[in-house]
Image (cartoon, rainbow, N blue to C red; front, side, top):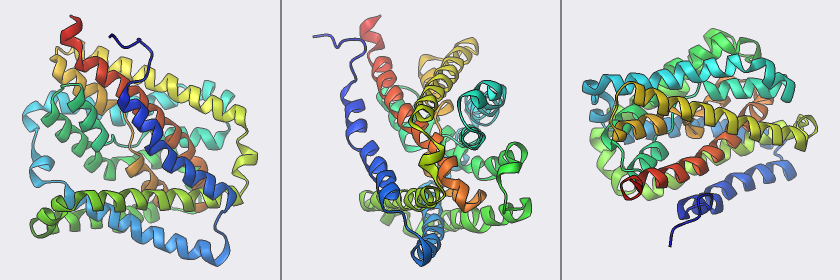
Length: 331
């Protein structure tokens, strides 16, 4: 029996029922029981250590071959990187007049921050695989996006969001990126020959640690934001506007990646890779980067657009991956 056109598929239902609830529960917990005072100081120091561990794990998990491979398909990788770090930020800038009419200036800064983030790795590769796209190219493009993002995202933040990084000078922000993100990542790459096999063997347990790190940073960030009056500044109508903005931006960027792939003569498999790698933004990279780049009292507001966009992109890409996967049956 053919599935109704707009009925969510099983993958979408799993994403809605699992991943979304965990982050929603964290935001709800932070809203009701925010950490304050000395507890907040302890948690803040703990999140700094967890962020360093997170990027150490990213470095150790990423094979040396994935970092340097894929150069022969440079047109595809360049297309993905241009959409991630050029067209997406340009879209955020061009939409500024309309966005400021719908949301507050603080939330607009969060939208711009979302626009300059690298692509996701795991979900981009997973959706490409489900859609029967070019998986090796997706591995290379998504990995390159995150590696380059360590350098490019802070640079774009300094260019586009200079006014929002109050409390962090450009030099201070660069130093924070170096010792909190880059050095742990490099250390992970150096340690991979000795611990890579162990990490592959225990990847399920390490994935839980990876997700727990992100959830902890989200909790601390939203606790600070709640104490500063987040929900007084973001009424329900503005949340609905944010969701609508995320839907429009995702639709525009996915349409552009699809159109550009076909105009450039890519195969259907390569088109799938460009669409899924070039249109997605990483919560795993965005949360720790926001913690490093922004003043603590602004992090919760900055992360709110990213969290909404992240959930929406998972649901939409799950549906699209299934549509791509059955393309031969429908033709």
